[in-house]
Amino acid sequence: MSAELLSILALILMFVVATAFPVNLGALALVGAFLVGTLAAGMGTDDILGAFPGSLFVILVGVTLLFAIATNNGTVDWLVRAAVHLVRGRIVAIPLVIFAIAALLTAVGAPAPAVAAILAPIAYGFAAQYKIHALLIGLMVAHGTQAGAFSPISVLGGIVNGVTKEAGLPSSNLVLFLSSFAFNAAAAVIVFLMFGGPALARRTASDGPSEEEVAEEALAEEHGGASGAGVPGGTAPGGTVSGGTVSGGTVSGGTVSGGGGTATIARPGTGLRLTAHQALTLAGIVGLCAGVLAFKLDLGLTAVTIAVILSLTSPKANKGAVERVAWPTVLLICGVVTYVGVLQEIGTIDWVGTHVAAIGVPLVVALLICYVGGVVSAFASTVGILGALVPLAVPFLSQGTLGPIAMIAALSVSSAIVDVSPFSTTGALLVANVRGMDRDVFYRKLLGYGAAVVVIGPLAAWALLVVPGWLG
Image (cartoon, rainbow, N blue to C red; front, side):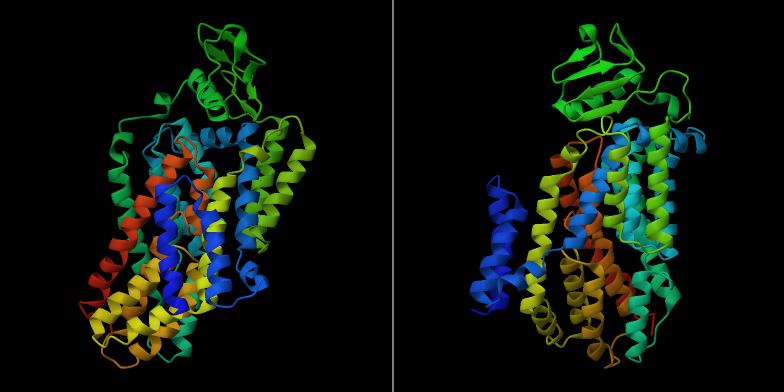
């Protein structure tokens, strides 16, 4: 049995074992990378460890740590109140605004993972405080980042347009951009309808949770369901309510604190006023945006730096933030991505693509190439997959049997729309930062949605862009 086929069978076995037993899939993937890499492909340990996504690890840890601090000191809640004020209390507008902002930022050149890292924690603040379905708000972030991801000045758009130009194939920046935008906008509409979007039209900010409910949620997140509201003396198992009063089940001002940190409860009438540490935290978030988007600083290292500065300025307020980093999620994502890196090193990806292209029936080959792009990109870097698959498709497209503009657009859409998978960088950030839903439940639901997109997305792109033959 070839190393390529063995590596694919091992991947399937990992998913079966992780489904049947309570074992972290990331840990299984690291074992698989070690065994497959050394026994089947003769790889050295350094080569296997070289596939570990160090940059993604730092991004996940840095961003979740920063926004754990921002959640502890109430900055995220302040951002929620400010955003609701800007949309004049119309909750139904919040998911749409999130989608539009994400699309705009990626369209002007920001990397999609960076946009997701910045927007996801803030968007989940909306979801938690105004009872918006976590999948609705999270998928608006994910599909929004992909909607603008293929503009002529974006990272992905530049890669695809550059490869097609070097190959001497006809291309259209506008078709590529509009195709991605249209497919992701359509997906966003479906998500909006599926996860309670229409019901939000009947609600306003005044229908949001009371301060008592905010306190209950804060303690529930920290202590598995314990709450401080209505507890005599303001105490709860593992946590206390301080700086305010507990009367008749109502929390008035102060903080909810416990072993994992504190959550600020705004006093009635505080409006949009910031404390000094909240102002510093907000400045740090703005600095992260400016550093990454304008000055091209590394996202993960910049986030860690800001988080450490904030921790030093107020150690007591930020106690427990490190424990709130989603470590199981970090292991899961980094382990799977490491295994995919080993697959790429072995040559499994090229092996699959070559065998697909050898089939010979143009429309069938086009569909299978779209599926290869979609399936692999759900587990790996979209940039890397497009950089490998577009050149792989060039000889096939040079035959002139299919329109290259349509095929390149379909391949690009297929490879990018699946970034909602929890194993992609964007999907991983959604899982790591989720609020308002149990993280394991959210992961399973996102995995199901991502699987549906992997099945439907490439097929829809192929059917609407390639089959009609309306693009040369």
